[in-house]
Image 1: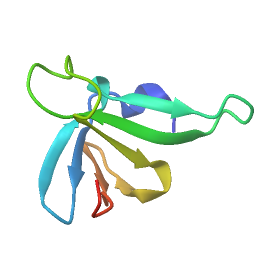
Image 2: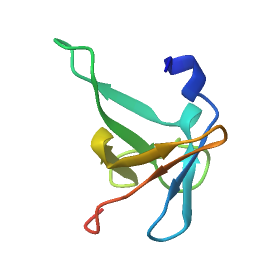
Image 3: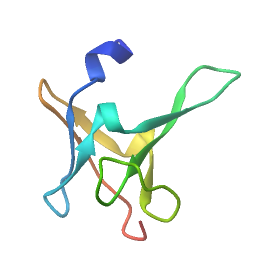
Length: 80
């Protein structure tokens, strides 16, 4: 799957049935030596991600459960 195909998908935490954001508003943490995606960094709060710092969720890539045509369903760790 290409990165361009991920853009615009809604990100949902299946445990809480909570909308976390849209992939176009998230950051990706990429391993510079392997090129693999390590984490999704999802801003929390108002104003479409203009607030940073403590108001973000860092989700390891391996917590993604499925990627569908409209959304990405993931499992956010309890301590996040």
